[in-house]
Image (cartoon, rainbow, N blue to C red; front, side, top):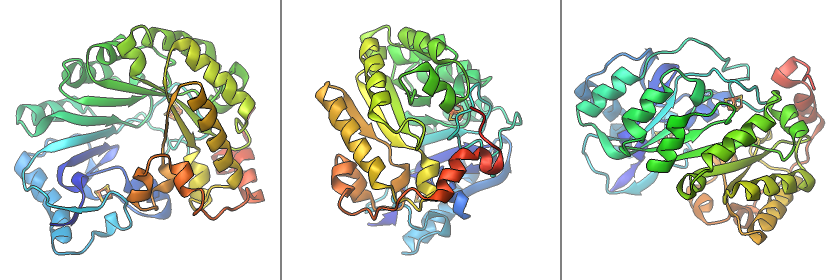
Length: 357
Ligand code: SF4
Ligand code: SF4
C-alpha cells in the first residue's frame, strides 16, 4: 500500500513533441509545471515496451519510496492503495495535433504558450505496435485532446483501429462543424462518446464565442450524430460559462431547448478554464450561483448534468467526487469579484490582440 497514481504506472499521453504519463500537469504548465516525461522531443518514435516501462518506473519508484515526483506535486489524482506491478497501458491521451476549424476564444491552443501548429507526427504506427505487443489493454480509455479530431488526418484510421471494433472506450471532444461517419459508427456500434461545446443557444452568441459562423451546420451535424438512441446517449452537450459572453440564463434556456429538440439528455456545465486559472481557481460567486441555477433548471427538465472541474485541480479529490460539486463546495470557496484586469483580458483576447466581434 502506498501513494501513487494510475497514470504514472499505466498512462500515456502523446503531446506534440513530448511523450508523458498524463496531461494533468500541463494544465499547470501556465504556472511552470511540466508533466511526468517519458521522452522529451518526441515525434512518434517506437519505444520498445521494456524501455517504455523502465522510463515510467522511475516516477513510481519515487512514490514507492514515500516521496512525490515534482511533476505530480499537489495532483488530485494521487491515491493510496495496493498497486499492481503489471506492465500494461489502460489510459491514452492523444493531443499531439492542434489544428482546428474553429477559433474559440477560450481555446488553450490560442494562448501564448501553446500556439497552433501544423507540425505533428503519425501516431498510428506506435499505437498499432503497442496493440500488437499486447500492452494496450482491451477496454483502455482513449481521451482525445489537441485540436479538432475530425479534421486530423488519422482520425478515421484511429477510430477503425480502436473504436469501431469496441477495443477501447473513446472520448472525443468535437466541435461538430465537420461530420464524421466513422465517429457516428463508433458511437452507435461501440463505446465512444462525444463532447460538443455548444456554449450557446443562438447563432449570434455562438459566433462570438467560436469565431466561426457555423451554428446551423453544427445543429445539422448534431442531428446526424443523434440519429439512434445509442448514439444520442453518447453525446454530451457542453455549456462553458464564459464571463461576459454567455453568462446568463436567457442563453442557457435556448441551449436547453436545442438539447431537448435533439433528444440529447447528457449535459455538461463548466466554466472557462482560463478564467479560473487566472483567478487562482477562485470562482466569483456570480458564476457559482449561475451554474447552480442552470443545474436546477436542467434537472427540472429531466436532463442529466455533469460538471467538469478544471478549476478544482488544486482541490482534493474527495470533494470533487462528492456528487454535485456546486453544493459541496459552495460553502468553502473564497469568492473574488471579477476584477478589471480579468475584464481587460476578455476584451483583449490573445493577451494583447483586440477581440474582433
Ligand atoms: S499524479 Fe497527477 S501529474 Fe502525476 S501522473 Fe498522476 S495524473 Fe499525472
Ligand atoms: S473547437 Fe476545441 S480545439 Fe477548436 S478552437 Fe474550439 S476549443 Fe480549440
